[in-house]
Amino acid sequence: MRAPHVFIETFGCQMNEYDTELVRSILKEKGYRFTDAVETADVVLLNTCAIRENAHNKVYGHLGALKPLKKDKGLVIGVLGCMAQNLKKDLLEDDSLIDVLAGPDSYRSLPELLEKAAAGRKGMAVDLSEYETYADITPDRIEGVTAWIAVMRGCDNFCTFCVVPYTRGRERSRDFDGVVREAEALAASGCRQVTLLGQNVNSYRDGARDFADLLLAVADVRGIERVRFTSPHPKDFPEKLLEAVAGHPGICKHIHLPLQAGSDRILQLMDRTYTRAEYLALAGRIRARCPEIVLTTDIIVGFCSETDAEFAETEDLMRHMEYHSAYIFKYSERKNTIAARKYADDVPDAVKSERVTKLIEFQRAVSLKKNREMLGKTVDVLVEGEAKRSSDRWMGRTDGNIVAMFPKTSTTRKPRSLVSVRITDATITTLYGELV
Ligand code: 5AD
Ligand code: SF4
Image (tube, rainbow, N blue to C red; front, side, top):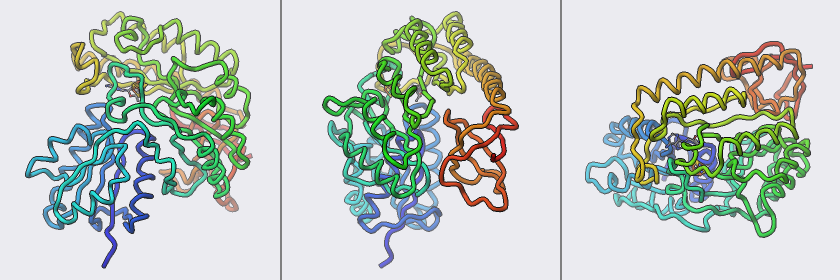
């Protein structure tokens, strides 16, 4: 009998990309095969995100598009990840397209759920666990020079806007030595860069050892040239972590430091647990200790009751910070969050849109200016592959995580290690240069 073929599509954050690698590993072990063509699949899995309304809508769009295939071929459809929790009701409806729901802590039960679904029985596993870290499962990675390792899962911060603590549950960390061994195995298979992932990565802890210890240990693994991490919370960025980033040549000089808002009243409503002044002081300390650091951020505009004057404080803080890049979002109310229960989502959508546009335009000018400062400089680039839109160029990233491209020469095979590139041109998002 032909082994069942699975098509899996991933939405959302890097943690979801990583989880897809775990799911591939779990299913391959049970004899499933994977396909890139949805038409040849027996099972379609959508690994979903719930962070904002448009993430939700995208998934509904994809589900709708699967309807004809489901009808013709009796496709098994599974929804995984953060939306699984919210879809319980839909699953139980008779005409539902969905056969299987599995939340982020339930991927071990997927083979059983899929088997039952193939026999016509719908099922779900959406319980959250206080312990599941999948530490014993080696993700089925696409082999390359970069890899992710999830070192902690879940989040205990309960920022009032955020659904993550409900969809991914409580914080838990993987064991220290297991992470280091995984990095060693990756290095042995040719990987040169590891990104340590966690919803709240600097809350990592294993006994007496904290995130800075882990970062240093992974950076010391022979063969690993670069270590990155995402995302830290500004509330716990101790001196020791800054020392590790600034002092170890293998730890990338890039910190993603989500600000969310520049007004103290809004920060308090969001329960971010820092003030504007505290955030600025932290950024100042980071820049003083490590002047070459690349700082990036996340911003939410139009949070409940945000006034024009409060929005202007976010604008002002961004002007002061001059981030290298920023993700800017409209506030999107998520069911069951503290904000949804306590505050009215009362900033009109048109006002949110206006605020987003204003910040994006401002940020584009800053990003261009920062990238243009690189002109004439020679930087180390780790090549990830061919440029998407031009097969005669390599694409890689600088230490600060900026995309850099340079022409292939007739003799270049894909470099598997850091190369020196002299920057000759820059746009808002990309540096262009030549190999030196
Ligand atoms: N609405 C808009 N943006 C959100 N984020 C998280 N929750 C919401 C929400 N309800 C943003 C935050 C976070 C990033 C991952 O997504 O800026 O840092
Ligand atoms: Fe959400 Fe806040 Fe946790 Fe980030 S730290 S995942 S924004 S609750």
